[in-house]
Image 1 (tube, protein in one colour):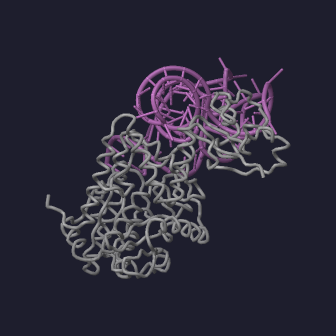
Image 2: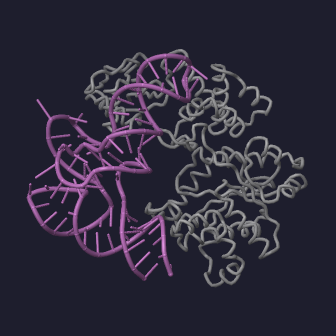
Image 3: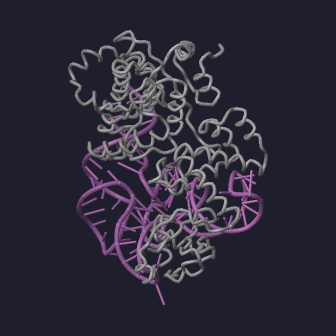
Length: 417
RNA sequence: GGAGGGAUGCCUGAGCGGUUAAAAGGGGCGGACUGUAAAUCCGCUGGCGUAGCCUACGUUGGUUCAAAUCCAACUCUCUCCA
């Protein structure tokens, strides 16, 4: 293994982002000697991104910090067709309007992490719909189709598996990788983009792009992939009971985001510190080597750092303080996630289970009832024993709120107005 | 092109005419223990303002007092032969 020369690649490897690379030495040289423009693709099927994409976001951020130019590619065009790999799930047709709306939401997430603009290292966001929807089939075939070797594509792992299992692979799906390869070439032409980064599952598609670039225009393109991220217990990142861990605060409060990181398993602390914070490696090493309960300190730092990046200093400090008061002091911090309920409605009385549901502490009334039956529901820190309990304005505590808890960790406040 | 399997709840997977909201495991949620961790143990796990009702076993029809279970067609899947 040759020594890496560029700061960016050193960081990339040292922090655990590295999985595979097309030509590591040359890419490293490129990063060391000039400014590199690289892109990562994201689909726009939702209004926000969740922690599943956080690794890619962090990579773009670090790239920008190292003096390079990140491109965020939104798959507006490909989203229109729908990703066929999700077997039988009928693909909902997404309108242009929704796609645009989702893109706006996603951009607002990115703006927390990277700087957009017209400067040399400013990030840009592009939509592949701009060049894909206008594509003429015949012309495309003539110009690009000739460069794709079916023989070669059949050797790709993703395709091979499907064929071996006699699992039908639709033409559309097969074309997906062609479109993605075309994206890469198009970005090279438009923005001088020479590197595509993606998850390990994108390897085949990425390689396809580098080859298409070379064949059609003699471009030197690079590909870089990141490992598939799972927790130490093998679960996929970012899924919890309450749903996905979204990165923007209108879908998940900064407090809940903080809590997500605070509840990291011991075994994942070091890995997460490396991937999702910008603490120096010496500090990461120190923190991950803490033992037993002392590791909680590391988890708090992890939560603070992650929340700071996604929601800003103030929100992170507040979330940490809210957590401290809630868990360490046993107080009711007024900054816990809060829902306002009209006073008149409260005066009439609302069943406890309905309120739990309304506030998001359960996913259905039944679930809330079961929570209460199972003894996991609390009202102002008192266990609720009556399944049919009706809450009214009389249940408001000294701070003028009603505190509902599901289990020991999830709390929510009701504020009458 | 031919033959034979399969499609069940979030996932895996039993059931093969009524006693089935559907075994078991996983996951998830709650409880105990702890360090807001892991492991372990216990409970819950379709919906509904819940002694009742509604929706569910690929799709559509049919047989029957009664169907996830039987029949037909369709769709999708898997294995084997060519």
